[in-house]
Image 1: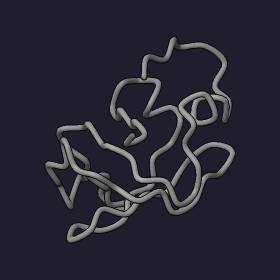
Image 2: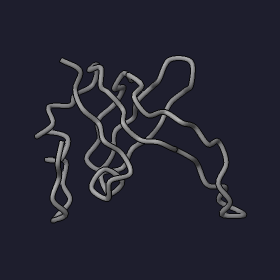
Image 3: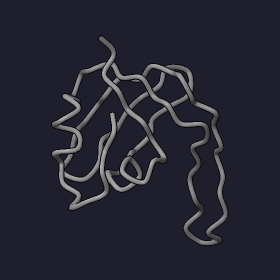
Length: 90
């Protein structure tokens, strides 16, 4: 899925045909959360190549779940900036 950086809308996920209940391939080397108080990263995961279940699709983000690892929230800006590549599994 190649996305040009432009106005960010839910079309990013619509064009990729990603919906709740889908199984997707996740291509992203590292994911981490940031502690809101210290701004330090924690919960670093190498999740490149995993399959994930799409749980919810919102206007600006989706929630996925990777079995054995946990849930992730992916914002459209992160997809456009290249942090995540989310592709439907055919």
